[in-house]
Length: 172
Image (tube, rainbow, N blue to C red; front, side, top):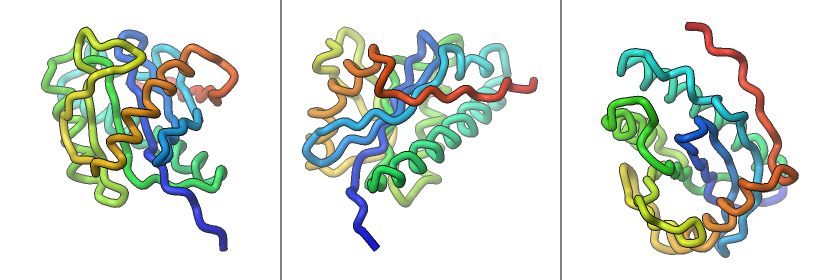
């Protein structure tokens, strides 16, 4: 049985477009694009109660993680840690929703562990400053994230490296 390469399973949440991207980032900072959603994929939480918003996002993002792990496995990789990076608080929702979702994944996902970041306002895409919302990441892996995440952001503008995931319509 071959050994799988450990990577950061990294989920970028674009709040303005209600979409997400998933990539693997290895310990050298090399980024492997995996999946992305259509614009609007995360939008069904808008207009729901706070608890329903949190429930929808937990379930949708759990599915994202499941698909991401599956794609990593097929590339002989495995998640060392799960990293969520959101470009802002969830749009059209109480700012507390971000903390609720981040805490859920940090507290309930223990293997691999989870860390959740927000990109600080005013950061440049080529070197975004990340603030921790929940969780922790070992320093060598944080360095890999800091090196690889800007490449992930750059690749988000390209269509070829990403497998588009079309989610089923959300039943209200």
